[in-house]
Each structure stands twice: as structure tokens, then as C-alpha cells.
Image (tube, rainbow, N blue to C red; front, side, top):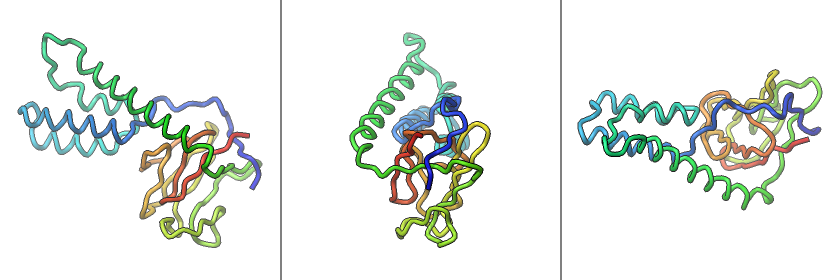
Length: 189
């Protein structure tokens, strides 16, 4: 495979993806709101589902933003969400930096190719011989904004920077991607 061809390497998604720790903290806040009678059981259940599916920090923050905050602590809730977000992001970066050099590199194709299919089947562009990888696990798809990673309904999931994806997700050089238990670091050209 040739080196990567990222259409516009400077392109950034509009908002960062929340980590599992950030989701857990939002779920804890929702639970506390439900226990205090601030959320009905239906609202709590709906927001819990949303917390597991959100794509950005702003979406996650909106799930807890209407919970009452004590009058003697204005802005406290947002500061807590921001602090938790910063700590979780820092922890992920340290972990990625520690194991990053040992990860195998994956270069996306240059030239006219616009998809790269990953799986165990021989017809996949990148065939991975690992039982945690589905027959047709995921695809990289190129758009005018760069490359996106799409899970194809795999059993063990596809992750970008530790977060399991459920929708097309923008990727760029330096991102950590995993297919089941097989992990790569995306290479820049």
C-alpha cells in the first residue's frame, strides 16, 4: 500500500469526540439528577441512550446542562464538565503517547482509490488475520474533507482514539484506530 492521501490534512472535525470517562461522568450526573427527582425515569432513560451515542463534547454537555445548579455556585456545572473533559483528554493523550511508538502504522492509499475495506475476507483491501476482526469489519472512505472511518456492523467494534464509533467518523494522521483487538496508528505522508 502506498502512503496516505489525506485530502486536506489541516481539516479538523467541529468538536472533539468524548471519551468513555467523560460519558461515565455525564451518566453519573444524569443519575444524580434522577435520584434527586430532577429527571423523570423516561427522560433519564432517553438521555442515558443519548449519552452513549453522542458524537461531540457539546452534545454531551447539553445532556446535563439543564440540570439545576445551586444558586451559590453559578457556572459550577459547566466548570465541572470542562475540568472532567480536560482531565480525560489529557489521560488519553498520555496513554496514546506512551504506546504510540509501538503501534504498527497504517497508511491510507493515495491516487484515485476512495475506499479501503478492512476485514478477514480475501477480497478486503486490508486483510487482517485475527478472530476479533469481522469478515467485513470496516471501511475508510475518502471525501473532499478527508478520510472517514465507517464500521460495517462488526461484532467487536471499530474505535477511533479509544472511542467506539457508530457513525462515519473523520480520521487524520496520528489517530489511533482499532478493528476488534487489532490497533494501528494512522500515518501521515
